[in-house]
Amino acid sequence: MTAIHITDIESAINYWRAREPSPDGVVLPDSQRMLAEVYALMVYRHEVDVDHQALAPDAFAAWMEWYRSTPDTPCIAICSTSQGDAVCKGCGRSFEEVQKWTEMDAPQKRATWHRITSEGTGWRFNKYAERAAENSNPAPGRPKRD
Image (cartoon, rainbow, N blue to C red):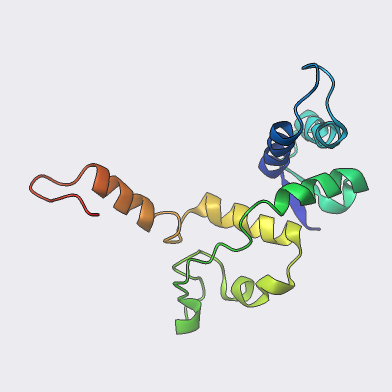
């Protein structure tokens, strides 16, 4: 089973809210309504993910439209798996995930994105954040970087 995380369902709903606002603030356009029904059932059942095959075709199509608006790959062009690391220091994906990325379907890619984002070990998530923090609050006597 390839699952879609609840945060991705919520992001897709917000994507559609921005694209197709409710005409009266009450009635939801179809794309939002279908995803909102999935979201509501997940909340009611205390589920954090849903099998993508369990989604109605129109709900999955709405999710896929949101998915196409997201970055395809977490790669930051610093791939340590090519140097023999089991997990890439740049993005946090495993060697197998890096190798099979182009063969993965959208739910598999989003599951990988969710995992590496929540782990936050790749430089994509920490090294550049650390540099930004250093630049905004440099150590005493240390100049800001440009």
